[in-house]
Image 1 (spheres, helix red, strand yellow):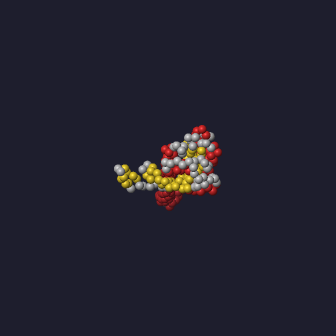
Image 2 (cartoon, rainbow, N blue to C red; image 1 turned 90 degrees about the vertical axis):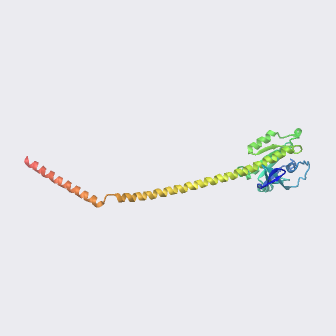
Image 3 (tube, rainbow, N blue to C red; image 1 turned 45 degrees about the vertical axis):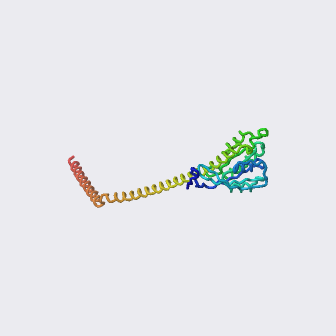
Amino acid sequence: MKKRRNGVHVHHHTLKTIRAVVVGKDGVGKSALTVRFLTKRFIGEYDRTLEATYRHHLLVDGQFVPLDIMDTAGKNSTEKMQLCMSFAELFFVVFSTTDRTSFEEASLLARYIIQGKPLGPTGPTIMIVGTKADLEFAREVEEQEGRLLAEELSCGFYQVSNAEGYLETQELLFDSVKRCLDKGKSSALTRVREGIVETAKSFRKRSLGHEVAKSQREGLQGTRLRSFSDVDPIHEASKVKSSSQEDLSQDGENHRNSVVSTASF
């Protein structure tokens, strides 16, 4: 359905809800990034024990996309990561460019997610995000290191500044959601292709079975036709008998000639 509003067509068709989660070591700016996703504001201080899930809507290619995004806090335990993996299909794995240990933990988290939910047409979308890019004087992780990690794990990569970069964080969000939607379309197409292939295989199998059955029927009919076209055994026996009599007569004649010849000497 479309509704005209101020001369602009707005599509009210809603795509499926995308569920996202922001994970990483405490202090890397997960909550600041989440708020930047949702608003234009930047807030520097958060309760590090507070976890929350927000509902947001994006307009992607003229369609509304509901986004549920979970901001996590505290230690990244196995139980916590299992909960995140059961909840989300889009993962923002965050580290601070000013904290190398957070980069190492981000690497472990991304690998853990991939191990539990292998990448592929139906797998998760993972974005590795380096924050605090504006704090060059305190940098411990170079941008190239983050890119190499993302390339190794087949993930997306962004380096942003939550404090200064509203537009770049919005670009990160939209790019991530579009990747997730495209992956869903790809998996749907894959299922369609698989269905077509299976249908074709089934059709070929039925056709082959039909051809085999047809050949067998024709073989049986050919056998019957050949038996009906064989020479009548009675007639054949008569021919054999007649031929044998002729041979015997000829042998007798030869014998008599032989006797006559012998007698003449």
